[in-house]
Image (cartoon, rainbow, N blue to C red; front, side, top):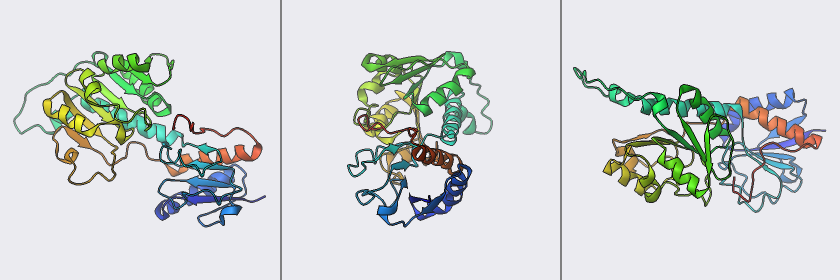
Length: 310
């Protein structure tokens, strides 16, 4: 039986994903008609992006699952028209990209590489960073991406503290949870990495009170979600010198407006939401595996928790 799979993303992404998705379906032995314009009532599965045209799922009366191409589902998890299972994107390409980006920027700040990049001719002033074993790194968020980053940094010698809403147990990492755990995690954070989901409970988790808990001259790295940070509070902490630097990849409004203070602050590095892109080849395999599971009556991988919002 041919399965109708609706691709709902931008036209540009269709040109990028069409081939890898069809290849992945073929590798799974699935007979799939992948299209952007199936009649809604004929669709078996929707491959979804918040930037795509399908936002009202009411007409998709026979759809068995909605499969997000994004790791974060906060933009869709509250959509009441989705009555089918909703899956998140968790794939090796996302994890590998995030590990590399986070590790690169942790090392950049640990080694004070910016000092050398911006060194004036003739400036031979030495600077000696502490060893990794002397620099505490805290990761807020110990989901798939947070755990991947923690396990990559650990062999480099950094003492890693992780915080999550629910208690985790990861070998070699100090895992904390709850309000008291958050306070302790922030106090240890000479370098703070934000990898929490965007939920009402995490909005503005970096605010005047939590910023005050960080060690002086702490660095903040945010490849997670823009709303995790109270922007005004972070800018004030940077201006006061409490926070040494912030490297930010995600923002409340994207693209970040040209007149935003982050662009013009000498203690802020802006990157254009590049830390972990959904990669067509690896994500297509995840989509194909989940469709195979759906057809075989097996549980879907990476179901969104609608009560928790991610």
